Image (cartoon, rainbow over all chains, first blue to last red; front, side):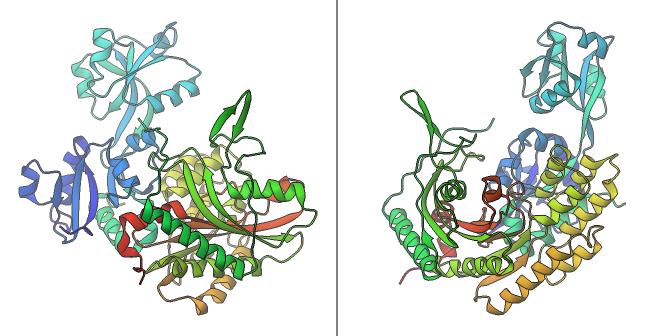
Length: 216
Length: 322
């Protein structure tokens, strides 16, 4: 890898698990041996292009700072961080809902009626925006993982979290009481790289869209 | 969690010398073209904006100069019955950073072309573009890219549809991200949704190349924007034959940065591989009328702090001084 290797930031976790198989057989397929190791900088099938494997919440920073020229990240993370980067496409996969979830039997009206509502979430910005739209106030309990535990253990009355199939919620006796928004994977680009070197970045962006976006 | 630690960089020997050299060379270039220096006070006299750096002087709240264009506008509107046609400036501005890595103190050199109401502005816009085209050579950049845009391409259709603040801001934010899907999301259910989305797609369809201006023909607002298209076409025809070597000229129809300020043509200078624009400007004809003066104005600012960073991190982008 040279200092001029172009870096694409891919997310670890749920989105990454969906993404890696979709890239197999394309010019941006990730090196299988490197993937099995613990390295976080992975060569691709295209010389001069490498992938960075990053936590979703860190990924937009690497792209906004221009360290990675392109990246793939959930729109929920983008909305939460509001970084200065370009969002070239909605790739469609990784679709999920950002939902208010509470223990089975509790309705939205029950939660509205609480004099001191406590909501645990990894998405404080989206939650605040929803509370404002609904004319509600609540104490936000910021969490970075396992939010489902919060209502069960009394840390909060409900949670705002991503729901894909609902199986994790069901396993914890929780149900969706309101949908705040929807999220899916987005192709993002560093503003500087895209605007100053479009001939270098655009073909790779088009490759990613062709490989990852479902055909209409 | 964004980092908000103020970043006050000290310039050590090489960078300090480079700043002195660049400031001198750029002000020399501007002086050669008839631009006379004005140096507004470092302490702001106008209403204090949110982004300014504020201090208490005894019981008085004061703020430091945060933007030369605004400081100069105040100075000119207060003290000049007729505007000087060409002014230049150099120095530091102090501004709270939006991105965590941006410094609070930033060095700038820039210029403004001011005209009385009624005077035709195309020549002034081309004059500024020609000056900006000379700047990569003065700074020793091996290559650069000049983007031509026009704020009216977005502003006028939104105004024609009666879209102001709120929804208009969402559309502009989506265009700034170059995300037509976000435009569709923002406009969902609005009677103008199909038109605005088609316009956004036309603006975003091409970033450079000969077909860029042609892309505007696909917009539902093509007739409304005929004047802007002709203006850009004339500017391209004036500038392309005199393009210096190692400078590319590109049209960027979706340039919406500073849309609440710019009213017409915009200019942005990039270097290949640089993460931020190195100079930016455009026409802002509403500034002086808002201060009670019927003058039109355009200008640009060279962001020397970004250039100093670039010279440290990417010296390969610069000619080495002999």
